[in-house]
Length: 493
Image 1 (spheres, helix red, strand yellow):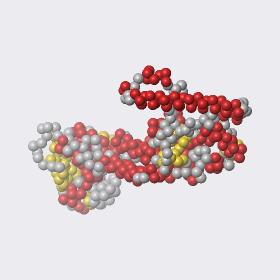
Image 2 (cartoon, rainbow, N blue to C red):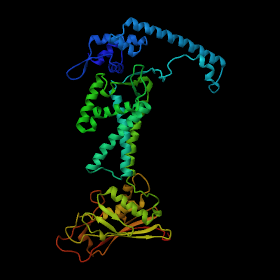
Image 3 (tube, rainbow, N blue to C red):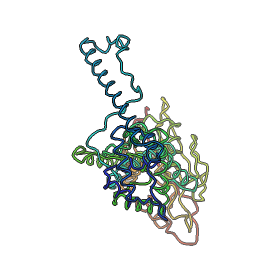
Image 4 (cartoon, one colour):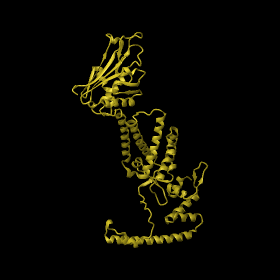
């Protein structure tokens, strides 16, 4: 028979059955696949052990009786003498309690030396908390355990996402190194998080919300986990329960775990632990709170995704210095683009951008008496012959970077809001924001400018620029330049 059937027959919990096996009191047979196969003799042996344990007989004495080293009558004689001694000690303790109570002293007035002679001579070892009612084995509650795990792993993923967005400034992890780092970081954090929480609180945040508790099973009842026990259980669960988070292996491990749970069998990592769950009536509302927590973490992740679009300096645009403006642009380049670019405080660029000559992309930055930027003039050329590289000028992306670097105010949609300023500039020729005016024009344009260029409407794919529609052969004698200007209304700055 299986351990589940033995538990039903004997009324002894599986953690205690495993404990007695570990102590060598029960030795079930093993099938070819390694599973335990309990016999009728094991049921009778377990019932005998439980009877002797209820007589408070020590495990060493029971082991000696089973092994034939100690006759049962002699063991019972010794046990009776011990119970008589305990009864006397209990009576002595009751009398001492009455004496202290009669003296009517507070804890601060209690003098141990006065009562030392009346103390019972018993074991002064660690006292275990009494067993709490309202708990039942959690082996079959696979859905609650799955929800608890989902909450715990989501906490770790949200924290890791925040590190990616705000510390590493990487919206997506690309390349083998970062993918391996992602795998290792999440795994190590999960093992450390669950181990520490089990050791300190007997359960993780997800387990607590779902009314689950993990304790160490023992002969004298459940007790708190040690550091080593918590770590070993978590590592065992990570390897055999999560399949090391490997795609196919983890799916198979999960399905096997669900199958065991539906049969009411303990998971391999829970065999020597007391894994229990509160009665349903005592955890009313916790499942709803868990869903709220999960929704809050998802919403927080979305907010971080949007908020991280902002550059590091998000004060009022009128307070930007050349230094903070330059830092903002370079931060945005690394976060929003794949370009190998660097912007400098003198308004020049270095690096590469779609094989374009960046020496033609310049910015003239003017500052006021207090060091704040008062005007930024960006110039970039238009294509003068076919084919125009990419058809859409790369100056579009530089305009987005400049707008976000200047006008991000800390709102969650900083980069997208800055992009939206291109709309009125395109439609009306200028736009106003926070005391600034933004406008653009084209210099050195030929008289028949529209015969050579078509204005492209704003979109993520096409940008906001002109594309060459002139003849496939021939070239303009002079290069038109887009002049994009951001300046404050008040020139007294």
